Every structure is written in C-alpha cells, then in structure tokens.
Length: 571
Image (cartoon, rainbow, N blue to C red; front, side, top):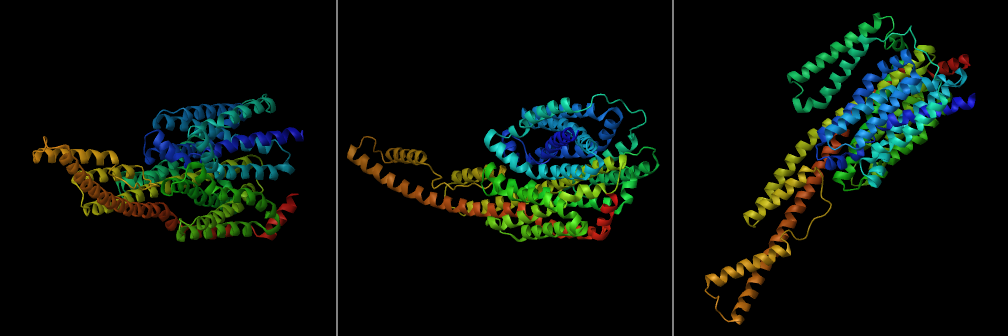
C-alpha cells in the first residue's frame, strides 16, 4: 500500500514539474524564437503571458470541476490537453499558432496542477502528508527555477521547438503510470457545486490586472483603456470577495484567509516568486543579446540560482521545525534583498558579480519555497487542506505572471529609450565622417538593421569597403580617367602607369575610410552595449526597494515556540 502511494506521489510530481517548467522554459529561448518566427518580443510575451494568465485563473475552477466529475478522469484529460498543446507549440509555423498551442497547454496545466496536488496528498496516510506536501511544493519551485537551464540546453541541442516537444515522452510516461496506478471506480459527486460567479469574477480580475500590466506602457497608464482595466479589476475583486462570503460552496473559502499564517504564506509566495522569476525572465536574454553568449552558455550562467534552490529547498524544510517559520522566512527574504542590492550595483561585465547576486536570490527563494507549502497547509484538513494547496498554486502563478508582465514591459520600454539613444549617437558619429554620402547611408542602414535585433554585435569588421568594392572603384576611376584624358589609344606603358597611380590613390582613400568607419562603428558599439545593458539592469534597480516589503510579512508567521507546540500537539 505504501509502495503504491509513493509511486502515486512520484507520478503526480511529474505532472506538477511539467506544468511549472513551462512557466519559465520559454524565457531563454525567446531570442531564437523571435528569429525563427520573425516576430517581436512584445508579441512573444503573449505566449508567456497567456500561459500564466490562464493557468492562474482556471486552476481553482477546474480543480472544483475535478472534485465534481472525478479528478482521476479529468487528470487524464488535462494531461491529454497538455500533450496536444505541447505538440502544437512545438510545430508552430507562426506566433499566432504558438499562442494557440500555449493556450491549450495552459488549459491542461490548470487541470493537472490542482488534481496532482489533491491526488498526491490524499494518496498517503495523514501522518505522512506533511512530507508529501513538502515534496510536491519543492517540485513546483524547482521546476520553475530549472526552466531556463533546461530551455537553454534543449534550445542549443535541438532548437527552440525542442523545449515544447521534450514534454511529449514524459506526458506519455505519466499517462501510462496513471492508467496503472489510479482508481477508475470514482463516481460523480452530486453534493459538489461549481461556484460560477466566483470563477468568472476571479478570471475577470486576473485578466484585467495582467493586461494592464502588460500594455500599460504602450497605451499610457492614464489612458482610458488602462484606467478602465484597473477599475474592472478592482470591481471584479470586490465582487469576488462578496460572492465567496455568501455562496454555499465558495471556490476559495475565505476561512483560509482568517488564518494569518496562510495569508502570510500566500503573500510571500507571490513576492518571492515575482523576484525570482524576474531574474529568470531577463538575465538569459541579457547574456545572449548583449553579451553575445549562445543559449546553452546563458543557461549555464544562470544555473547557480537553480542549484541554490535545489540545495536549500529541502534543507529549509528540514530545519523548519528546529528554528521556526519566522526565522526561516526572514533568512530567505534577507538573501533575496541582498541579491537585488547586488543586481542593482553590479557591473555585469564581471560575471563574478552577477554570480554572487544569482546565488543570493536563488538561495533566498529556495529557503522560502521549501517550507512555504507546508506552512500554507497549517492545520487545515479535508476540503480546506486541498483548497489551501490550490490557492497557493494560484498565488505562485500570480507571482510568475506579475514578474513576466512587469519586467518584460519595463524592458520593452527601456529598449525603446536605448534604441533612440543608440540611433542618435550613430547619426552623430556617421555625420562627422569624411566619406561619400552613399557610404554614410549604407553604414546607417547596417546599424539600423542591427538595432532591430536589439543585440550587440560580437565582432567589428576591419573592412567595411570590401576588396571587391575597392577593385570595382579602381576600375571605374581608371576607365573614367582614360576617357577624360583621351588616353584610350595611349601606349600600354602609359596606361599601366595611370592604373598604378589610380590604384594607389583609391587604396589610400579606402584605407582611410575603412579606418574612419571602424572607429565610428566601434564607438556606436560601445554606446549600444552601454545603453542595452542599462535597459536590462534598470528594472532590477527599480525593484530593489520593494524587496524590503517582504520583511513586513514576517510577523504573519508563528513563533518557533508556538509552531513546535502545534506540531507536537498534532502528532
């Protein structure tokens, strides 16, 4: 019996890992996808945002549907949808197709995630549930953190399509294990009812909030569209709270939030997830676009953060009962704060400085995410226990969604400013050159093409006027002089001497122009790297002060003495 329950928890961990992995696995592949699909970063961000929006908004209502119609059967449906979405995304011919595929994936994930938590928790005896909750909780955080590393390795080896197609064998494995392990005699529950009003109001609230975060900079924060969306999200939140307080079977029992520790766990989940995913969203693109690393190297460069999560998640869960939740959450929060201070003052050209910041943020997130699922469970039982896990999962997705929306939006705005600065510098630099107007136009066009990719070129050519162009210019000038000086019939000795003179003059002129162009392009390259580095790092500098808000949440958690007494009393 115990063996089967352990196998079930492991099988559920596979589903949770795949769902959470796909919240961040795209991040490092964005440059390759942008090139492969011939699209913009803002359009690709919808493929990221749609997954997190639908995952967050549908998790609880679809979890409730699973309670009503049988979670084992719905779990298989969720895995099947996730499989179809992965295949669709992997074979996408354009960004629209990709977005549809990601939407199908998110529907599947919104079914798989809550059902995985419930099936896994209920498959073990009550005395062992804390361990199962901790394992499934660590799996969530670790999967999201490993996303960029796995995405970078797969993109480098198999191309960006591989980050979706790699799901396929694991889903098939999970389907096979489910067919063997799950109980198929479940019947529909006639007592359970879906909270339609709560579901719709929560979906409207999250959609409006995320949309305004994504498009606020483009539309203007004081525009009618943004103000309307903010108003809709506030009204939807009020409506949601009122409905949940009065409906017989609420989608989210508000009783959960009467528990101060659960509320603290939910808020810390959002905050820690936001600050962690923000690093995973921007840094891979910075390493590839600005510093010129390939995807695998960029993945390896951020892997230390994931390694810290892998090390500290189980460690913090182990010491939770020894030092108490307050000290654990405080330690993790201080590490994240220190990491963001490092990100805001570092020189990213020195990787060791980036490394220190990544280690701190990863360790802090690992310390928090290890025990947070257990802390959220508290002393809840029955429906409140399963609801607490679904709600915490939703809050985790809200943190991810906010991170993508806020930081990608901030980066997009910064890139516009950076490109204006680079273009102005390029025009000023090229205007001072003593070269032909055509050469100036060609140089500016080349810079404009490079700017469109939002990357810094890793090489600077030594010749902008090629040997072929130089030879053509020599020949054209020579023929022109022959005609002007009426030397077409002159002896070969005269023509040879004239050709030698023309060649010397043209070569000298081309060498001088190439030297000027190399100097100008080098100067523009320096400006480009500086401006684009600012565009990527500035969001972390702005985000650093808000990280201190995490310290205000420490008081929500129980003191060590009270927590230990509760555990001992429970045992």
